[in-house]
Length: 228
Length: 337
Image: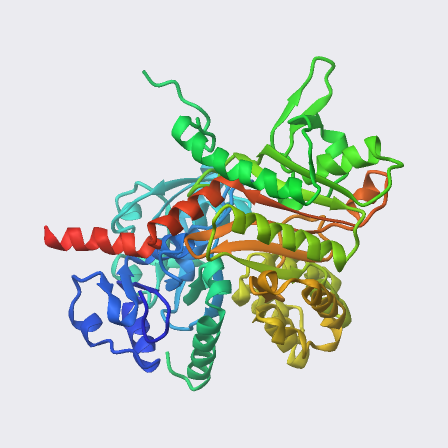
C-alpha cells in the first residue's frame, strides 16, 4: 500500500484518534474519509490502517505497518517484564506531545484527606490490592517502590473495584481527574506522564529511511510551530 | 493425544526439512567455494569457558549440572565456541582461518512472534583477517550466499559498534549515563535518548550530534561529512565500501546508529533485512578482541543467518505479497460478509 508519504501508517482509534488525524491532515493527507467512516479499517489511498491503540505496536513490529502512533502507556505496558523477555521490537522515534495523560495510583477518599486506605492496608496486612488495566506497569511500579501488592486485572471501569471493596487502590490513566473525583477517588501517587509517540518498524526504518526521515522533519517543524 | 514440547522449539517435518535443506545446501556450497571449512562443536559447553566471551543480552540461558557438579550451558551462538576452538586447536596455525557452521543455538527468550529458543544458524567466521579486507570479504560472502539462495530484495545494514561510544567519549558525556544511553540506542528509543541526554546535562551542539548522528542512514554519501568524533569509524566504513564489488555495494545501507545487543563486537556490525519480513534475518560484525580473551589474539569477523527467518523471507518474496496485502485480503473478505 503506497500513499502520499510512501508509508503504511497504523492509526489508533480512540482517545488518540483526533490528534493523529489532525497531524496527518497537517502533513497534507486527505483525511476526509478517515474522519467520516468509522467502520472502515483500511484507507489505501492515504496508506492508513486503523486499529485499537494497543494493537499498533503489534502491527508495526510485524512490519504490517511501517510506522504508527500509540500512547506511551501502551508501549510501557508491552515492555519486557520478566528477565530474558524482550519488549516489542519497535523504534520510538518522536514524542508527538498530544494525548497527554498521567498514570496514577488512586484510592478512596475518606473523611480525613490524609488517610490513604491503600497505605493502611499495606501497614496492617503487608500487602495492597490494586486493580488495573495495566498489570505490568502496576507490578513494575509497586516492585520498584518496594511494596508487596496483589494485582487484580480488570477490563472495564477500574473505578468500580475500590468502591466495591474488592481492592484498596487502582492504577489507571487520567487526563483531567474528573472520573476519579466523580467516583470519590483521590490521586495518591503520580507514576508516569504519557503522551502519543511515533513508532517505526526496525526494517522499514532502514529500507524506507528517506520517507521516514522526511516525515520526521515535517513533524519536528510542526511540533516546533505548536501544532499537535 | 498431545505430548507438548517446550514453546519456542518445534518439530520439523519432511516438507519443511526439504525446503530448509535446499537453503542450507546452497549456503554450504557458497561457503565452501570461498574456502570456508565446516565445523561442528558440542551444543553443551562449560559455562566458565563460554563466559570469557562478553555476550551481553545473548549470553547462554540454559544451564545443567553434569555428574561431577560442573555447570554446563547450551551454547547461545557459534562465535564464542569457534573462538575457543581456534585458541586451543589452531594455537599456532597460520592465518587467516576460515570456518563455516550450520548449528542450533539456544536463547532464553520468551517466545512471542516467531522468536525461537532453539534457532538454526548458518554462518561463517573469518579469523586473522583485519579490517577493511576481512570485513569486505565477509560482506561479499554474505551477499553471494543470499543471492545464491534466491533472495531478491535483501539489503545489508552496516554500522560500527565503536561509533557511538567514541562520540560519547569525545563529547564528554558523564560516565554514569553512558550505559543507559547505549541501551536506549540499542532499542532505538530516540525519545528516551533525548530525555537521558537532557537529564545528563548534555545540551546544545553535543546533544544535537548525539541525537542526529545515530539517525543517519543511507548510501555512501553519508560517509563524506561525518562530525570529527565519528571520523575514525566512518573512515573505516568507507575503506570497506571501496573494496566491495558494485553488486555487493549496491546492497549496503550505511546506518550510523546500528548497534547490536551482543557485547563482543568492536568495529563494523551488520544486519540483513528483507522487505518480506519485519525483523532482521541475520547479522554479524567484527570482534577483534574476542579471540584474545581465549588466548590467541587475532582480529576476526563473521556473520550468522537465521535459517528459519531466511526461509520465511523467501516464502514471503515468492508469494509476492507483503504482510499487508494479506491483511488487505482478510479485510476484504470481512467486508464481503
